[in-house]
Length: 266
Ligand SMILES: Cc1ncc(COP(=O)(O)OP(=O)(O)O)c(N)n1
Ligand SMILES: Cc1nc(C(=O)O)sc1CCOP(=O)(O)O
Ligand SMILES: [Mg+2]
Image 1 (tube, protein in one colour):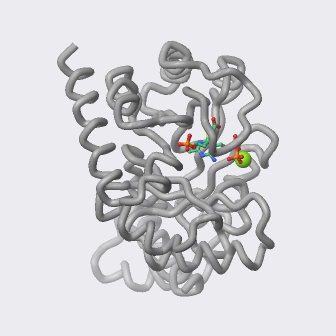
Image 2: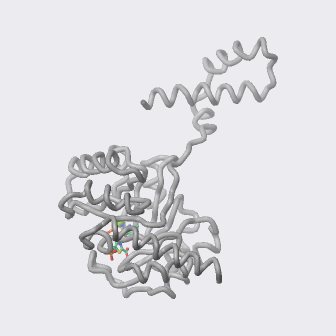
Image 3: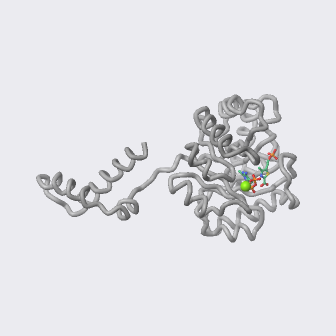
């Protein structure tokens, strides 16, 4: 697969280089063969344009090996409206994580990201990786997963927002907005006002960066966060503990859409 992509990229970029010198129709083919034969690897690499998987962060489900049937959960939740999935395994071996993520990628109709482990994301063919304070930096994660992958970054404070100004990321996740029982969050919840302040600082420098909110998000809070300008909500328990993941996802999506409508109207 990689060899096929490399070969096609070499052909495409060589074709662009030759076309830019306006050769006549009779000499294009010869010039193309010459360009391929003398191609400079660095120049080709620098000219390749890569398409990222589309990122729709509206309803982001985070789940891990504690779920009794992760694939079934993801199928139901995505049918209900989950737009992005993250595998978050804080203790499994590398081999276990790669196996789990490969299965998830095959089962999920939406992009799957891997928490913390850029190496696992790459090995398992995931769409990208999510990192936070104390993990690989965003730049290090990007080095591993490459330019076509999605890299997400947790932001817990205004200082972290400032530090992220030049980080090579595709979205930021701001939290912990409310108290959560799904992980130990040492800092007090930032609340909706804290979310607004951090999102505002991130958007000063990067107005187009998608920003999701995380921690303790329920249906009611989903609406309030959308109205406060969130591009998405990331949840664990609101879906995994609901008993009906498809319905829970639908309700969260509807609540989020109501909040977005309020934001647009204001
Ligand atoms: C979408 C999303 N947002 C935040 C986090 C938390 O990341 P991090 O701070 O690195 O903590 P761990 O999840 O690694 O314990 C996340 N995973 N996903
Ligand atoms: C994985 C994670 N990160 C958080 C952060 O604040 O950085 S909160 C969190 C768990 C969110 O789970 P729930 O939706 O059940 O509260
Ligand atoms: Mg992490």
